[in-house]
Structure formats: C-alpha cells, structure tokens
Length: 141
Image 1 (cartoon, rainbow, N blue to C red):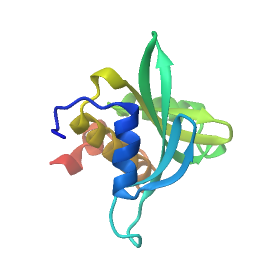
Image 2: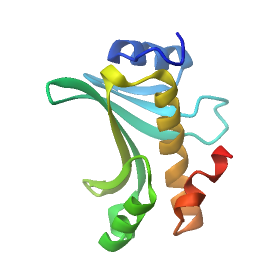
Image 3: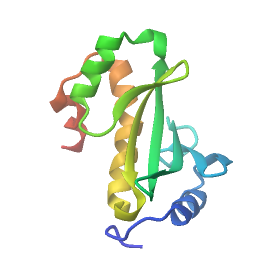
Image 4: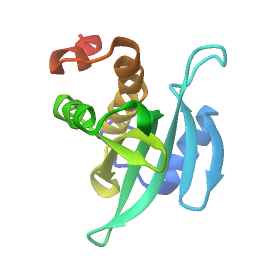
C-alpha cells in the first residue's frame, strides 16, 4: 500500500494485526500498543474505533493521559490550545487525548502521524508539565 492510499476500517484492522500491535478487539474497535517494536520498549495504548458522522465512516483514536482528577478544567483547556492535532477530553474518570478523521479521506501517512502524536503527546504532557505549541512538534525536527 502506498502512503497516499486511502484507509478503510477493514484494511486498518488487518494492518495492525500484521504488525502484531492489537491487544484487544471489540466490534468496531481495536486496542493497540503503539508504536510497534520490541516488547521491552515503551508503548502507549491507543483505542481505535470506527464511528459514523455525517453519514460517513470515521476513525476515532483515543490515548489515555491520566486520571481526570489530576487535571483542572482550565489546564485541560490550555492543553487544547497547544495541541494542533487532537484534543484533551474526559472519558469516565480518565483524561484522554483523542483525534477523529473521516476514513474516506484518511491516508496511511496521515494515520501514521496521528498515531505518533497520540503516542507521544500524553508522555510529553505528563513528563514535562506545561508545554508550548513549538515543543509539541519539536521531535519532528
């Protein structure tokens, strides 16, 4: 598959199966450990769900950040102002970073960048505290 090729839900699930990063599977959702690599290297759980918006299939990707009680509402809004991709949200008692994209327009290279940001951003926020917009993308060099 080329980097410009569009993704489908079935192709996504097959791709992650082949990579060996699927840790749990539900109807319309898979939990992956990202990025792929040796088991002893740090990986972040990211939940991928097929959703419907505007009558079209979308991909919603969610990565845990921390317990919701650890982030004040103002801090969460400040984090959203810094993130160019995704947003901070609360799901139950967990604060998460998530991003959605229409599957019909999602290219494989866009998916790769989205997952890299979702895997890297929570660690950057937790490890380094408040971050500036330029810091979020500094590792892309």
